Length: 323
Length: 255
Image 1 (cartoon, rainbow over the protein chains, first blue to last red):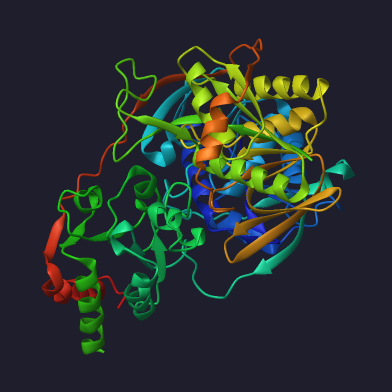
Image 2 (spheres, one colour; image 1 turned 135 degrees about the horizontal axis):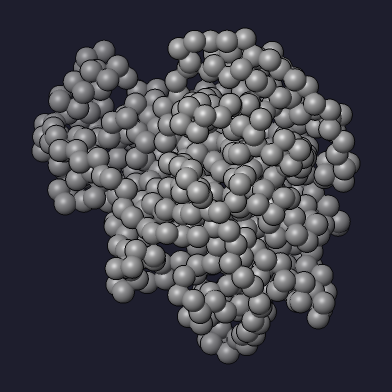
């Protein structure tokens, strides 16, 4: 009965692709620990939930429903998950380590006074739990031991490649009505402001970023042009935001956005830890830098040694020539 | 209004983080220290809020005696009251212990004065990144809490807080007293003025010891991640490399 319970992250029914990482991780873990995976959907049942369970080979799903849960709310979601965790005593209650995944699991564990291990990459069980997790956004790893029966955790985002199940099976979905304290509606989402349509920094397939080497806000113009030509987005390092050259929304890094594009073009960026951890999930990295010893250059798969102010316009010209 | 900001002293690493011989902590022999970035912005946000609405900013940290440096930094940018809860173990406490200690400290501070209308944490610390201390404290105190906040506006009895999500913003309207986990980007922290710096030297820091015991989570060791050793392919020098760059873009299918 205990099992591995996985929180399905969704926005008003639309399931976040990051959840597929958690379902994949849970399935692999379940095999090793000989446990069953149960997917947990909080809110108004959506048929997508059924489809996702089937696709990822999850045979059991639970919908936690309450008239109070009309949208995302960290306290309501956390309380709902803690009630389920207390009643069914699963071995593991987990999510993917997105902001919301970590938030809900933290709430649920806090309500039960249980430990929560965020951003794990490996989980083992012998007499205790032994877990490897990320510190410093992934620049350093920490092995922790936890001596409880039940554990709350999140898997680091981008640490698991989502994989659908070889054998799909129809999921048995159970709807559980909960009684929740109406006080907790105080943290429900009240309204939303939409941004422009299209790719965002975290979903773009090309990101062209500039660092201190760009020199000024105006000098980002060629980077903008290159990003436009490649239907990508412009990013920047923390030095750039601290200088006020670009908005923080463009910042790639540990305290900015974690990106995972097909190619990351890093122009004039030295590649300090804070920046690197935001860029390291990129499939390919091209560093453009005058310093061959720069961290960004030595860690990148590809590099051009030279002044970005000359190299970027030359790339733009070459693209235009071929079109 | 009375605002509390909880901050953490963290090492300020460059391009590599080294570990001590016992593998239990970051080797800081050659590193400076700073306030964890999200929390630096939380201090700035609190300073701006009291500039607008009146009130005071109290800053609390759990750490070694040296964490006084981070409290004095907060003083130099406008905070008024400073509390250090000593942890002389040489290591971070586990998140549950830290949360317990902070909750106790807050209860004591409120018993001796006014209630905090708003308590700010960083969304997560730069070093251990446990993503939970603010939430645990709020749950212990029975107060509303939302994380990931990049915009704060105070009305009479509520705080409107916004959060960036993929494709837009979510807006929360939370009754005070509330707890918020703040993210870098909510503001651009000011540089301390000369006057602020001088005043910060005289700031009075109170030290409050709180009994606590370790939680069920034990740190075994720190280690470096396996580096994917990739030979960097140099596509060329200067603008002449453009042809090879565009070939690569073509190959990756992004052209």
